[in-house]
Length: 295
Image (tube, rainbow, N blue to C red; front, side):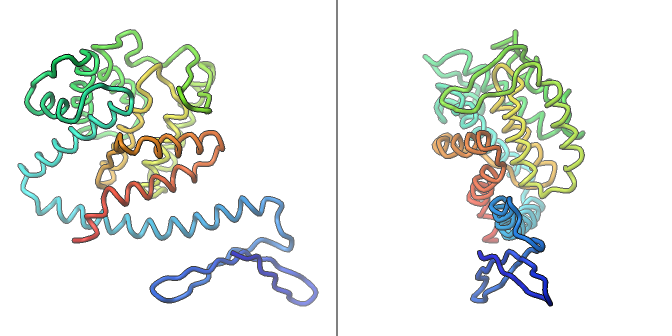
């Protein structure tokens, strides 16, 4: 990337120029900076490069969506239900495991598929896995758009049998995130931040690419951290709500990849730079759904 100066008459005009290779051809993209180089040139560079980055990914995501819809239409109903159940089990296992659940994938599968409760495992983990299954299917079947009432309802259903005192309730106390430098907002800030979040969502739900929207919904909501517990699980549920509503394949964030996930979230939160998490999320979404590009 270079800053190029163009002189017309006695005046100088500055452009930011970036060259990239596409299919053995070199293409140049540029953005006008002005008659002087802006003081925030480094920030402009980041956004310029990420804009190019998004163009590349959005074309890929559109192809994933097209082939996903095509496959959905061709798949028998019973097979689709089985695939949905398989995803639900893995998603429940991973999202619970990230939050400290002691259930293995086999435990989770036996519990949710066959109703067999694992021995010598915490009752809380068992109940929350069962409730997560219910909330997951409720999320997939919800016809209206995302709103505060449904999020509170899902949170209540997730914790009603294990943490009744916090289920479906906005926290009124300070919280800390273990192993993170990010400090969540104070209780006094939550009402404003939640209103701001849902106003932002309503304004941008039709403007932003669905994969970007899903990533930002997750990042923004988990950063507000409105609940005493379950913020990650609810954020990952509403992330998939956005994808499902847009007829995009869902994403399961693997427990085994939790460190890169935590790092991307924390860096984006501490640096107040959403692009950090978006870059991570785009790559993860592609890796999870690249099978739809092979059709």
